[in-house]
Amino acid sequence: MSILVFVEGDQGKIKNSSREAVSYAAAMEQSPVVALALGSFQATELETLGTNGADKVLHASSAQLDQGIIQAYASVWAQALEQSDADTLVLAKSALGDAVAARVSVLSNASIGSNVVELPDTSDGFKVKRSIYSGKAFAHMKLNSDRRILTLNKNAIELKTDGESAQVEQFNPELNQQDFKVTITSTDRATGEILLPEADIVVSGGRGLKGPENWHLIEDLALALGAATSCSKPVSDMEWRPHHEHVGQTGLKVSPSLYIAIGISGAIQHLAGVNSSKVIVVINKDPEAPFFKAADYGIVGDAFEVVPKLTAAINSSK
Amino acid sequence: MKILVCITHVPDTTSRIAFTDDHTKFDSNGVQYIIGPYDDYALARAVELKEELGASITALHVGGPEADPTIRKALAIGADNAIRVNVQGEDSYHVAQQIAAVAKEHEYDLILMGRESIDFNGGQVHGMVGALLNIPSISPVMKLIIEDGVAHMAREIEGGKELVEVPLPLVAGCQEPIAEWKIPNMRGIMSARSKPLEIVAPIDSESRTSTLKFQLPPAKGSVKMIGADQVEELVTLLKNEAKVL
Image (cartoon, rainbow over all chains, first blue to last red; front, side):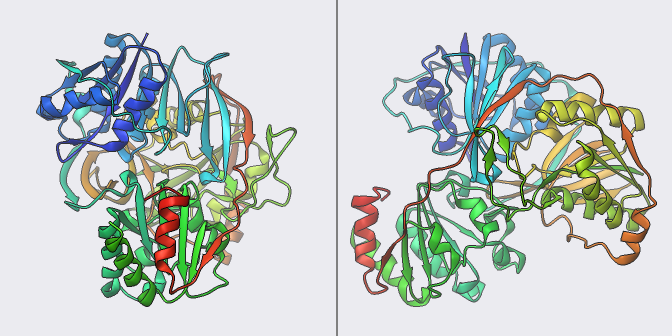
């Protein structure tokens, strides 16, 4: 039985989270690992999935699939599962991937394990460990169907980079016009920045920054670190920053290797979005800020003084 | 227009998470339950749509009688009637089948719910319901306008949003800033007592997963404080001790 991995692109490049998903499938040591890519991609980009552990890449290159139409994607994944004789579908958690996976689980009679944080235990059935209660706990689940779908949290596995090149095969699914009732009329996407859910390092700002005009402090540090930027809920509510940067209970949940919180007090709702991060650094002028209790490293100090010094220290340490 | 809003009954966001019975059961001792915050956004938007366009709103919950106060709160906020499918949800697929059965019987134009529940965070139910009813499902939706039977929505994507148009009926998983949360007023609370809450029996359905055990993350070690004038020290620690740079 093969493993199918859905890979997602961003501006023509395979997302790192999708490369992690391929690495995860390879580490399951059940072959072959077949990656599935939809829409326009360069063959040379797809071949590189081999380095992450893919044996083969199925490419459905129809331009109709350039946009992420949830229903159409679900139908194509279900056909790929059928044709590749796969019993497991793996993908990185994402806004699109989650929405599609749910439909595929119905179409393909699959059990679904979402927000999986480590490799499955297949010693007795198929068991996964998943994050629940917004990162405050884990559940060990048994997936009972003959087919299953796993959506992975970031950092569920170390990225594999030492594989060979993969062969790319054209895949021609049936596209049913009924699945294209949804029209995407425009896409508004910040270009050139590192995608927040993809980022290994995240620099986040809160009300302590005092206003959107001071965001260069956050951005300069992020640039020095190669990090994405994010913000707390009040900052997004006041429209200092766009909503897609809001992390927390009702925003995005991130699990980077390093999360640096600046001028964020650390309300429990904020922690719910970040407590799966490997290492947390908190910079706050209030020594009583609750965030320090959840931090690995802390600095009590004024962001306007500490952050530029930290940016300079990072730059000079390179 | 007929709107169905599916609500979860979940521990308040500030709850202490603990388990009993050898880590096989959630410890609800002292826990306050609320309408899931994402579902609350969906409900708030439904109430606004009712005010703008005229609509009937049914609140639906799959679960036991312990959720009735939560359902009454949805009625107080502005749902016209409520249905509770009297069965403990076993997993997303189990719950989705129950919702789809109710939806098939009553034929709603719009089925709204939160993008995910805040207990299991699966974010799967809206997509499953869409697939079971063979209608479009869209998530996460941060803006929803209905015009002439067409839903105009903003859907959040990584790094931004896309604008989407879909003819009704459809299922949407909602999130902020689709609407402002509504706090029930006294009149709402009084009228909620007399609004119909129908208890229906579940359909035969299957679950596809079983929860074996819960686990809490290891306790966080204590924070290492660094002086505000020692930022170089922080860089060194992140490099050599935490190994994240």
